[in-house]
Length: 111
Length: 117
Image 1 (tube, rainbow over the protein chains, first blue to last red):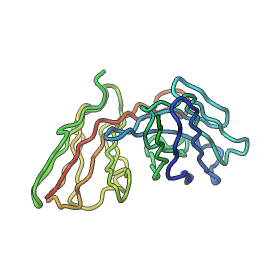
Image 2: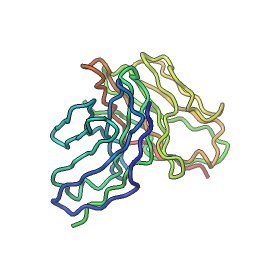
Image 3: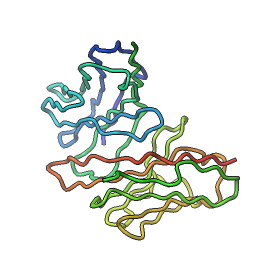
């Protein structure tokens, strides 16, 4: 599975959109981009995933560049409860097992 | 469904003692994962099972660690003997990858915080 690079930390004002970038320049054709988050003292939680099309669900939107070498997770209206560590993970469709977590981005939503 | 259940939530033990962590996956999920999280190393996959069979244990740190899954609804992670460097939060997760495409969200339990003195 390809490696990902994320900024260590970001701040966002409450009510504003939070845009979390992820670089995955070595991604291959059958690899998906997954996002999980971990709120303090809890287990990680799935947010969204995608292959090449942009995706949206009730939690967030995922924008994947055309060359698939990077992506952005968007929380449209961040709240204080969105303060967490956000992990971007690249995973092969043939891999039904492992999630390899990097260091993630610590998002601090401020009032 | 109650989600993934882990017990105990907190465990404090002394070096050299045996520690057993327990996990009940979500009913119907046929994959189970054990992770360990520390400040220094982040979140690491230790081992995972499919249909109660260990598939990949390459993340298990050493022979002091062992994991079993005697049936579809129960798994244990055992450390014997425990050492202070084993202090961490241990998470269990489960998934059912029978959905469309590659969608196989992993559901994590609340974790067990282990402190070895």
